[in-house]
Image 1 (tube, rainbow, N blue to C red):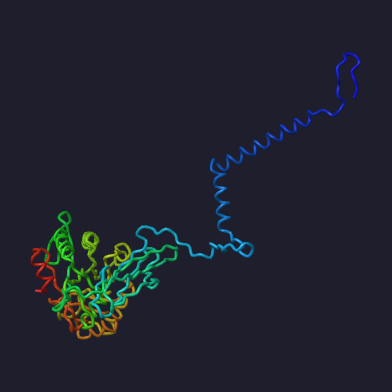
Image 2: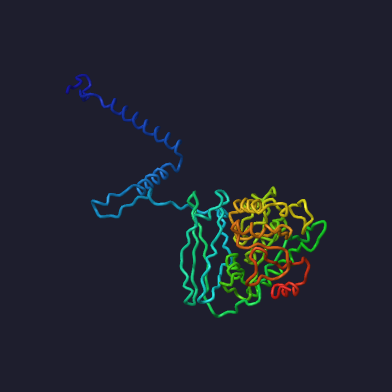
Length: 395
C-alpha cells in the first residue's frame, strides 16, 4: 500500500472492484433476459405444465420392486379405457330387458346386437357374464360388455326372472304388423290403412306399457313355436315393414319413450339402407330382413306379383344372406308383399333364419310352420278397444 503525500488521502493499491461489479450486473441482465424469453415462449402456465409433465412421467415410470417390495406399476401394460362418446356405441338387447322364464325350463340366451357408428358391427366382440339357475326361482343378472378399437367400453344388463308366479300363454301370441307413421303436420297425400297417426301409435304403446306386456325375442318366439318354451300370457311382438321415413322419424322416438322393443324389416337395395342402419340405430330397434332385392314386381301374376316367384331357392337364399350381412342380424324375415313361393320356405331355412312372416291374418301358435307365420295387421285409424281386442285374441 502507499499514501498520497500531497493531500493525505489513503489510496489502496489492490486491483479495483469495478470490473467485477460490471460483470455481475451484466450477468444479472442476461439472466433476466433469459427469464423473460422463457416467459414469453411458455406463457403464464409453462411452469405448471412442466411440473404436470414431470409428475405424469414419474407416475407412468416403472418402480423397482426388487429393492423395497413395492408392487410394480406399469401403466403401459394396462389396457386404457377412454371416455365413451355419446351415441358412439348402440347396444340393442334382443327381446325384453326384463326376461321371464318358467321355473324348470331352459333360459334362452337371446343376446345383444352392438353397433359402433364409426367402426361398424361389434356383436362378435361382446363378452357375456352372469349365470341363471332356472331350478331356483329368483332374479338373475346377465351383463353384456363390449370394447371398441378406440378403447371405449360399454355394457348393458338383462334381468332374468325365474318364476312360477305368473300366467303363461296357452292360446297364441299376436305379432303386430305396422307400416308407416305420420303426424298432423306431416301427412301423406293419401292416407290408407297402412298409415297410422303418431298420436294413435302413442296411445297403443301407452296401453301396452300400462298393462305390463312382455316382448319376447325371436329366439324365445321360435322356442315357443317349437313347444319347448313358455311365454307370459301378456306377450306381444311389434314389427314395422319397409323402414319408411315416417316410422324412422316419428315411430322410433315413441318406442324409445315407452321403452318398447320392436323390429323394423328393412329393404336392402334402397338407397338409404346403410344410412338407416348406422344413423337410426336404437336400443329399442332390431333391424331384420325384408329381402335385399325382392321387394319389387316380378313377371307373374301369382299372389301379389312379387319377384320372389321368379327366383330359385338358391337365389332366394343368396338374396337373404346378402342383406343379413349388411344388417348384422339373421333371425327374422318378412316376405315382400306377403308372397310365398313353393321354394321360399326351404330357402329361408337354408339362409339360417329362425322365423319368416307372411301377411296372413292370425296369431302365432305352438306347432306353426316357423317359415310361414301369420301376423296381425294394425289398421291405421282403428279405435283403442279394437287394438286391445287384436292384441288379446288375434281377431
